[in-house]
Length: 170
Image (cartoon, rainbow, N blue to C red; front, side, top):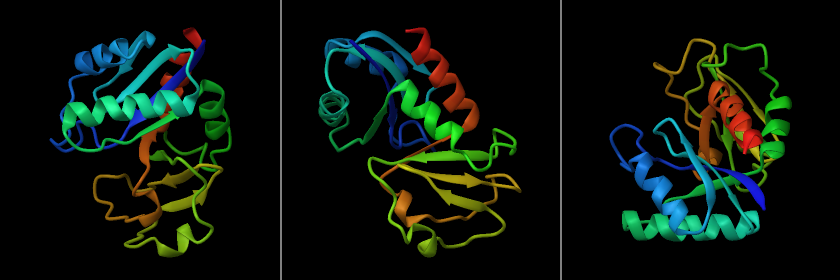
C-alpha cells in the first residue's frame, strides 16, 4: 500500500468549484482508497491505495470529472516527494503564509520565469516539479501572473507541512 497526497485544482476557491470535503472523502472511499482524510476545504486529501500514483491520479480525476461535469485536475505526491520539495524551497526563511509551492505534473519549462507578468517584488524560483513564490508584501494585493503555473495548484508552506505530517501518520 502507498500513501499519497492529492492536491485538487480550483476547488472551493473564490466561490467556484464547490466540493464539500465530506463528498471528496466519500468519493475517494468509493474508489477503494483507504484511511482517507481531508485537510481544510481547498481540495487536499491524504489516502492509502495499492495503485501507482499515476493510476490513483487517473481514477480520482475521472471521479471528479463525473462529479463536476468538467475536468478537475489533481496533483498526486508521496510524503517524501512533498518533503523534498519543501526542503528545496529557496524561500524557507519567509513567513509560511507568504510563500507558496505551485505543484505541477512535470518540470516547469526552463523559460517559465521569463513569461511571468505583473511582478511587484515577488520572488520566484523553479523546482523539480514546482514553482516557488515568495509574496514579500503578501498575496492579497498581488497581481502576479505565472502562465507556466496554469496547470498546477498552489499551497502555502503551512499547508504543505501539515499534509506531509498527515501522510506520515497514515
